[in-house]
Length: 445
Image (cartoon, rainbow, N blue to C red):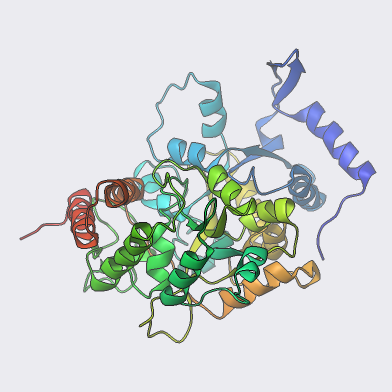
């Protein structure tokens, strides 16, 4: 059953937060004024997260209030940041003396929500407390020695039902041949078949297409059974070798390149923001796009529930798998190494893990630890996505791999050359392969 608060309860919580929060923001003439109030350290447990665009604050307060009923001495404070801001702050060592207030507040958090693709740098920077003293189940999850998965997200093909029907298509495309056909038919003056962007907070948009085709971009070392379970230390602790120049990846780049040459991709791929991409899709200027499950809420607020649909990303025509392949992005929770409230932090992480379906419901995602979707949601979009997710092969390829932000940047730069400079797909793949090997310290001997 989804946690709900009555209006009176919400007002009471707001009053408590205004009274007890470590920092009160008072808006005077459009200027934020900060008033510092010192609280006993044991009273407030701080969680930093990147869900600010996906969750209502009242939903988070509901979890905090429910937890506090069981732990009346622990007050939860949520600090919300963008994905990009958290990535910037977590992937570099913090200085001993922090003068910037925002960074100081962030660095004092007790719990960090993070993308596990950042794990290697976070451990190298000594950011996380090992969970071996807290969790017996740590060995059962990727990166479980350091953090707990709470929610999951997958990328989907969004399609404009009205636009597809207007040109004679009653269902979305299933493979590359159909996708190319749809994109060409959909393209007309003022409209494109597909909107695609190289600019994103997460991994490059080409990755979901590669996974959907059944390919991987990394190979595990012969003596490493599961790179996601290794402790990330050293230059290439996950024991992986770049494999970006494999035949399926090159074919995927060739497929995208053929769509570019056909003129069916909306322009400005290298500079287009997520907002611009969404505007193109929701306004009908593009018939299809790839976005995450959390983005369903954004799209439905603009288009309603009946004008668009979601499905799996089309696979290559020669795809040999029996199930669709999803690249899965998780949100993990870990304890800050220097926290003075580690026991309380573990208790709240455990609480959130036990309520993962409700948490996923609140942020419009999927449960991240094997739990089932909240049955009371009664939402056809999420029920469809969850059914696809449950029946899919799930890929978590970059957990524990170091320097992922650099690897992603290499891909974006090379794809920009593909789109703007006429670089060939095989040249693009070789360029990425070489720079990935250099980044991960792979010998070419």
